Image (cartoon, rainbow, N blue to C red; front, top):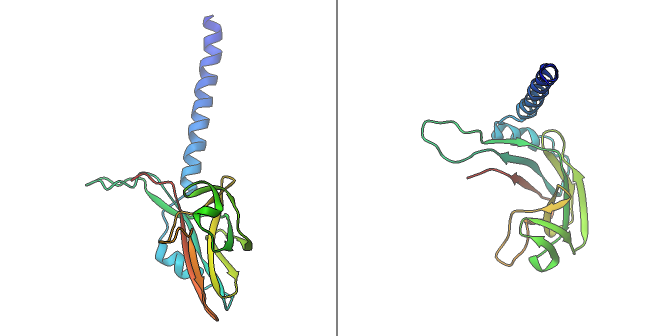
Length: 171
């Protein structure tokens, strides 16, 4: 039994250290960005004349205000699929608020964000709803007074700047 422990114990410790190291590596890939600089960079990438363009970020960690202690609250750009539908209300979706299983309105445009979270979609003038594909769900965390989900308004010869945030932070 002791001989087995001499073999198993170092193997267990090595496995534990390797798994901890991987977790640290994943967290260091995510850093807090200067959002003003990120938004400025992404605005300089806009090439469309009419539609929506902007930045998609994610916020995670402990964002509770703490006196004298820096939490691990970070915001960073993410790559996801952005889907734009005709103006959509809560009556036209299935699922929980902010994380929907299905959207029952017409898809009018979609794109992938780049490594800086930048996206742009050319659209005709009108009112639309924006969803982000997150974990096989339609994520949208904004509502208007009429129950419209993540509404945006596109005007003729204008680009609407849409700054969207997937929020997993604790407050």
